[in-house]
Length: 471
Image (tube, rainbow, N blue to C red; front, side):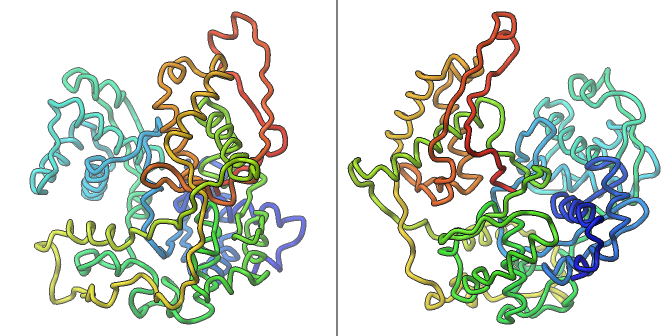
């Protein structure tokens, strides 16, 4: 590893650079901030070697961009693109995003928002199931969200006007954007021509003999690639549970060197338990979700996590039903995505065909241990727990959640599921081992003046734990 040759005085700077590129994958002159790109340019050579060696990732750094080309080991449905106000992208927003990128690639140095909308509307008309009508407010909002996502990353820069004004009234509002072509080019660089694919499996690591070891790693059965896959899991997942791995993967995860390499590169701290490993970020800068955090939903999720841990570990309470984790839905997700590939757009002569019969199982059944069993808490228990929390601490919650207990419960459970502290199943949730680190939450409620109550969202807090769970 090149990081071992870095001076101890510079190690913190090097690790910050590694965390920046692993968190963002694309860094520009303004995204995620103006200090990120100079930092990456300083350590470009060392990072390029270490990221390739440890993860099989390829790093490209230019004067205006830094782009990390990662490797996908599985399809993740829990990490969608999000708007500036944290709204999840839907199918229309993704379609608009792709069409906007295509339009920007053919445009000049500047473009107005209405002109960009006209280009996208014309292209959308040729795609079954996708339309953009500027007469519909919902279409305009989705289109502006896609444009805003690109603007946040520096692909386009607002020169004049207001996108929100156009979204409210396209006849009266307008916006003018400067186009940064280097960022547009860096954003969409697939490892393989999409017109040559008949299945999204071809984009996953290990599904086919690699053509370029520098880009997609080594062969699936190679121990070095297994080690790479485990390091990728450590920086991409909140928790890596041993029970979800094959025998070879569990062996690699158990080796001290696997997590130590990630710690040395990133400055993260490995929290190792019998059930698996979580990489904790003391700086909080590599976490896409900081937990515990402020805000009513995060506070209730923390309190609910403590209640769940106490219930599971309560030896005096009646025993809970225990169930294995539900089977992976990778095959279903792949089948749905493959069904959406337009056959008319595939170059059959150059297409890489994959026989679905070769992938009836994601891994060998004989390569997996007996599934672990986890305690299940049913929906009735969760509803009662949330009701009790609202009764005890409701006066400290934001007004909108005091009046919407179902919404509060739904969002708190979704947050815990995303952090892999629980797994949502039919009829309830399975409580995963990592939730025990939040047992014994202690609440302190600050007294507030009548004036501050109009504006503040007071924070129930816990005293023994304040580290982010997700990287």
